[in-house]
Amino acid sequence: MYTAMGMRTRLTSLTAAALLLLTACGGGASNGADGATAGGAAAPASAQEAAQEAAEDTAEDTGETIYLYGNDFVDFIAPKFAEDTGFRIEAVHYGGGEALAKIEAEQGNPQWDVLMMDGHGSVRSLADRDFLLTGWEPETMASLSELGLSYVPQDRAYFPIGIHASALIAYNTNLVSEADAPRTWEQFFAYAGPVGHADPAVAAPAYPLVSAFFDKWGIEEAKRIYTQRFADGMNVYPKNGPVGNALLSGEIHVAALQEHNAYGLQLAGEPVGVVWPEEGAPGSLRVVAISKHTKNPAAAKAFVEYMMKPETQALLTSLESNDSFFTPLAEGVPSRAERDPNPTFLLPSAEWASEHEVEIKTWFADQNIN
Image (cartoon, rainbow, N blue to C red):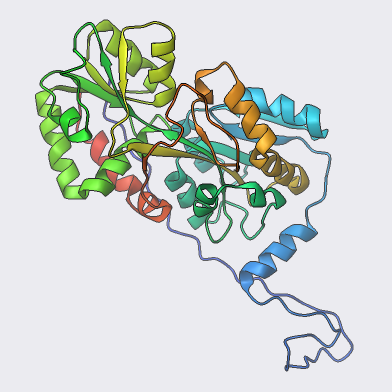
């Protein structure tokens, strides 16, 4: 369960350097009127366009292996990508908190090329501190649904693949009747019995879970609600697997449980009821991003293109794996039949989630809940 942990000191944001385009020409003069150089090439209209052009110029295959950091699907998708494309890739499977810590530790000598994980706020923070390649737009972005396109950031620092519920209300049917089960998040926090969920500093989907509540109710009100819930009986576990185990053992009666785990327990025949609140479930947006310092931009970009293809997302939703419970963001790709085809999600903006990440995680760590 929950133990206090030190939080990393947030690094000061790096100042983004403006990209200067140099042209070698006779007198070095500009015609000024239409922004073209004396050599006749039109200058980019913005720093973002210049960055995109520079990224495209360096998008060559070096033949080096790229390293994928991430959680769900990485062990399956990396060899499949290599088989289908011929690029060399190695997956390194981390929990969300572990991946972020590793990237922080490697910032002087990055060993990763591509990141695929839940939590757009955490990835937004990496972009804001100049860890990520920006300004490049994959061709397969045109395959995204309207919902998927709405999640693409303006600087193209990361790209959405899918979204799932970072928590649904799950209850032990041997201990809680359907009539008594919470149907809303307010009822979950007011439930007269022990409840629990995963640690936002460790489990990748758990920060999207708590940040949705802090955004929904406001930071001070959310702290008040959680403080009361801790007093009434609440356990916080490192990851969602232990949350599910605690639910089955009766250590907790009701859980805010990631949908992969909740539906997985139910399909396995365990005594678990699942409620998707009408108000919505906290959303966990899975995104893919490229390191600014990737050694093989061609392979890294090819991986992003691959993950956004409808065929790839259809493959992932067809897997007999709990991870396949998600809403694909490629147009026309259905989700698994066992879940609501049009679910409602509670999802703070990436900017809000990034801005408050350290504050919220630190507050949870300071609660010293055992």
